[in-house]
Image 1 (cartoon, rainbow, N blue to C red):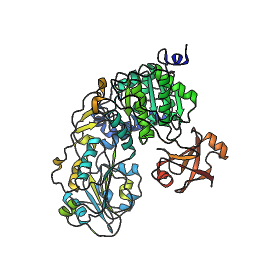
Image 2: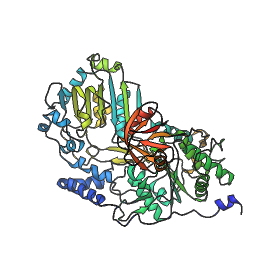
Image 3: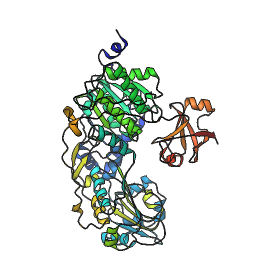
Image 4: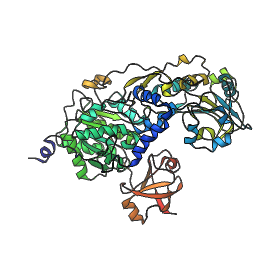
Length: 604
């Protein structure tokens, strides 16, 4: 038998099964967290049960309604942790009479004060925040309006969409953050004609092969990690392609006392190498004649870009063998490749080549930027509409006016407008002249629609009576830009049809999907990248590089690039040789807007 036939013939290669460990739930902390959720909501257990049974999950991108999703029980840890945000009562105005005391409190202590029920206002020289009417609060903003920046983190795409519409009514200088989202959206829309997931939970569970690209699902989306655990019980094989070995994807517990082993294979890639890896695998499939008939559904195979991915040939051959023998395949990708348009296009190429886009057990699921997208808008000169509605902009010295919707302030402010359900440390600190706090309604205090990361539209009912004078964030954004009638902002979304791309129906010219020529630079030398979740003041280094540099755990070092130098403590872990990682807090100082940069690690 030829080598190609030996690699492509036969059924799917099944994954290994087994429990994660002998200790129930991995550690007592999981049971403690569940007990803590019950304790925090003991004053309103009936309301908490209603929110869980009837509400849309506001803690993960899946957005399941009720306690069950397509696969089973849906109680992700973040949902339990955030439950008390909806069940606790409102704060007492008397608790806000000393702003310096409030500024010294942490997030947990401020949230424990309760939800914000009324507008509050603080001016320089005053001791604390005073309760005011909505008219007084908006008048104070109008009197101090100047060059402004807006930042928002939406509780849903619909809510953020309302804020975006309000922002666009006063300026065209608008961008969505993180900018990482634009790359993958462009790649999928230009190749498949959609940015929606082409697979569902049931496809993940029933698939022969699940590829996880650039995502630590156990941390970012434990619900999907639970889907993988169920897929494993049916014999699926799970392959993780990432720059780092994530312990949470080697084993996960979810709601199973002894957990599941998840990742069967882990392929470590250097930054930028994902696209070249997809080229190398696709080249193997072509050489082995393992490519589906493409003429009827796609534009045809393009020229392949570079296949020099830095991954050992045996690993490339193995991944290609798994794909060639799998009858169905689902790919899940996260923020690790969302900025890399070439990598997403290469991933689409693999699925199109195997006719694994939108049939049972097949598809691509992006788990990045949804539903908690962010808005960042800077109005440098003040808009004509603002000047016409509220008069000329204030020329008072100091920082810009910052309008913040449930997000961290972008920096010190002359005037800050905070729209949120609870007080936070970053809302209170660093404001010089005027602080206006406006009460926003929570997810379960308003009826509306919610679109999940999988593109499913769900109705979110009103389950909790709205507090005193709180209003939906979309309505507040309308008031801030001078729109008297919030109904001008229609946040409803059109009905979403079934699975996109089903039956080869691509919303593209001639109805054909597009196979792309993929080429992207691969990081060379000793480089540093950013990784979400690494605390400030810490740098992760691989075992090989630590040995080469003579470094030991917790050594104090300086991480140096052309842009800057950061003192850090050292943590040694599983990383590809020649790659170190820092947290997002140090990324701007060391990387600027780049994805990676040449680095030196010096002993302090």
